[in-house]
Amino acid sequence: MSEDYTRALVETLREAFEREGLDRWIAYAPSRVPLRVRPTVFTSPDELDNLIFNGFCVQNLAGYLKHHPEGRVGVLVKGCDRRAINVLIQEKQVSRENLFLAGIPCPGMLSRTRLLEEFPGLQSDQVEESGETVTVRTPDGPRTLSRDDMLLPTCRSCHHRIPEDVELLLGPPPFAAPEAEMDFSAEVGPIGEMPRNQRAALFADELSRCILCYACRNICPLCYCDTCFTDVNQPAWMTPALEPGNIFFYHVNRMMHMAGRCVACGSCEWVCPEHIPLRLLYGKITADVAELFSYEAGLDATLPQPLSHFSEDDPDEHIG
Image 1 (cartoon, helix red, strand yellow):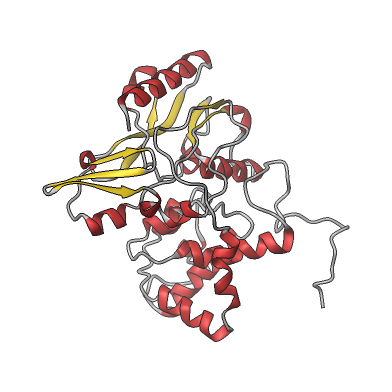
Image 2: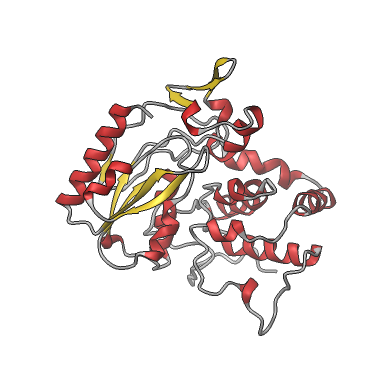
């Protein structure tokens, strides 16, 4: 990220910190891990000198709000962060009045996995983002890549890159990605069109790599239960054993819990150590909700969620 943009971003957020009387900012800072950043809580304006924003800011910051229920909190939000916050507001997990949201037009996040596969041992200071390209400095000289080719899969089909209903809409970063051409529902459509046995075989094959580490649950901004069903032992819904039954039970239950709530941020997929395409597998039920109820999670905090709302006027054609 250019120094001029970083400096302007820091100054803008510092002014808002002081002007709005915020208790903290939730944003990003550099990490010691290559090609990663660190979600960080800044508790004073001076600490913002360490703030950073680049193509590796993949973490959905909405998930960190549950740790800061008190005071007035500023959050740097991308489109998916903003939508997740709307879901949390709908579910009365956060109060909109306590938040100051600074929206940043998202250029799409880069795939760390793809970059490291092509450039093993790559360090953060070897990557430079500019416009629609990414330049990697290698011992053999610089390599210029198309930014679009290096995007995370979830960012390729995102149509909500500009956060809405924010107190402060920041200028776009000095790097960008082309507008998404594929609709997410169309992307997961082929899974729904598969014969049932083929679809079951696809799920079985992909989930066979699951090690039940629960990283997907832990990173999800909308998995906020103090006690997850996986941890309940009276009754014990499942065991930690790496058996197909336990793995299917875990993922199927989590899919059900995410129906009508998932904002397709892709956090579960990029954090998975086994690189299971969870976004597509979970995305099928998200696409079904969109088709059946004409509803997309997180776009409007004032609308009731279709699977947690009852009305006597609901149509009942689906009831046999």
